[in-house]
Image 1 (cartoon, rainbow, N blue to C red):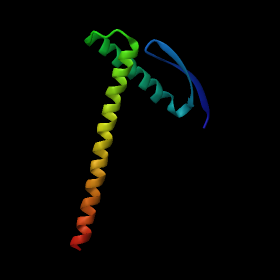
Image 2 (tube, rainbow, N blue to C red):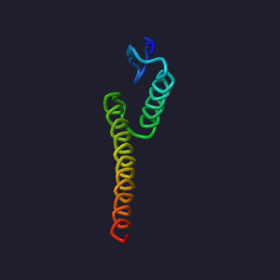
Image 3 (cartoon, helix red, strand yellow):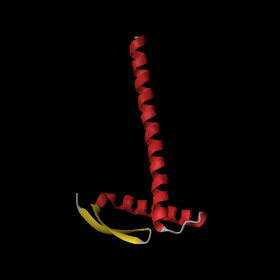
Image 4 (cartoon, rainbow, N blue to C red):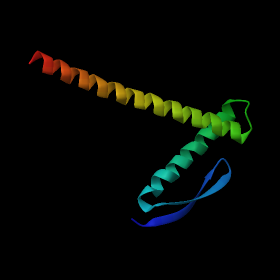
Length: 90
């Protein structure tokens, strides 16, 4: 895999990254989504400090991630319980 050096801007600051070429689109889209969320928070709340906006954004994304992972874990456990039930019935 070839690597690529890029710069992404998040919250008005530039960050140099070395990434796999195949990840460039995802990383640029993620940075864009973060900046979009920062702008929405800034417009909707009386928060102007970029650090606070970044913290709020991270909390939102982390909450979404935990919720999604919990759902996946629940589904996996449910499948295992059903498989065990089927084994007992046999």
